[in-house]
Image (cartoon, rainbow over all chains, first blue to last red; front, side):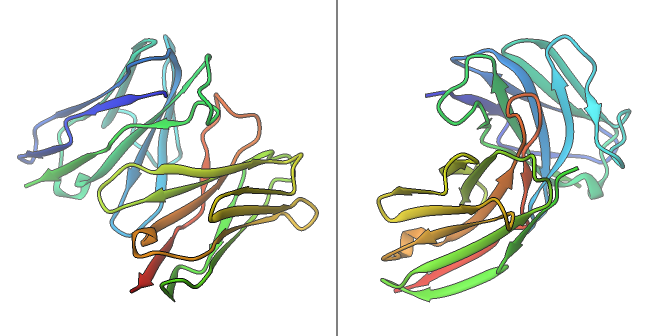
Length: 118
Length: 113
């Protein structure tokens, strides 16, 4: 089945530093990548949608200069949290959709990244 | 855009009992309705889905029903087991692929042994 590898799974960083999260589709071409943020005991909140080779479309209230998304290839998308602050601490998870859909219509989730900013 | 409401937020059942989680959606054009199970700190796992041209789908102990007229769909888990304990999310989408799923708020299911 379709697999999306997300790294790192956990990261602790100091305030003011930047953190990069990678999502790779291992066995299909991810034409579209969705980035979500999830607070404890809450639902998945869509941050942005990125199509390969295009600029990401951000949801209202999400700062595009703070959450940089790059989707330069059909197998890799990255989310960089710039100048991280404690309030950015959260669980970040990607979801990939491909032109060659696996059985679940192509919504394959990464394993998530637990970011803690101290 | 689409809005999905999910109830209840928490559900506690005894092992062997059935559990039902309900969702309503706002966009009548939505045509794909997946259900995900998420364990603490893990990725959401698709457990069952249904398309708008079908009213019911079953997979062993799990079933989903869809009422397009009322714009609601439900997840039914029979003969619950402790390993069914998790958070369940419903979602809805029109024209899958380049659009993001709209998720419900989640239901924390606790199956008491």
